[in-house]
Amino acid sequence: MNERQRALLERLAASEERRAWAPGEWRSAYALRDRGLLTVSKSGGGVHAEVTAAGRFYLRHGRHPDDPAFADDGVQVASDLRG
Image (tube, rainbow, N blue to C red; front, top):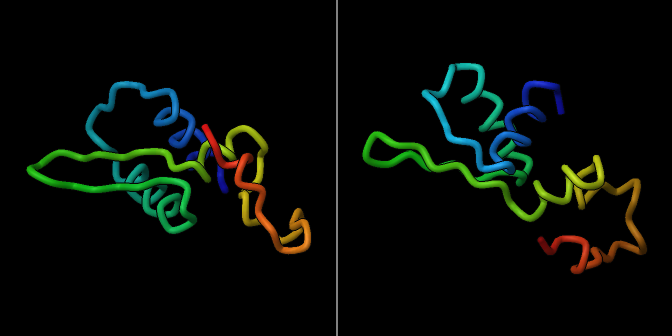
């Protein structure tokens, strides 16, 4: 994850008020969405983006919860993904 993506994830996790999205932010949001760290939907001219449980995990631990380097016999600890 690059710095722009992390900054966007942190801003959205902090529930900061959104301004108009810049083109680079869209690219970052879709990259985060593709990693399962963010959901993004557009409707009625508005945008709704929400940090997923995996995104919150990433912000707390600095890694994706499905990172194979940290797998414990292939079992994800569910408690790590809660709020």
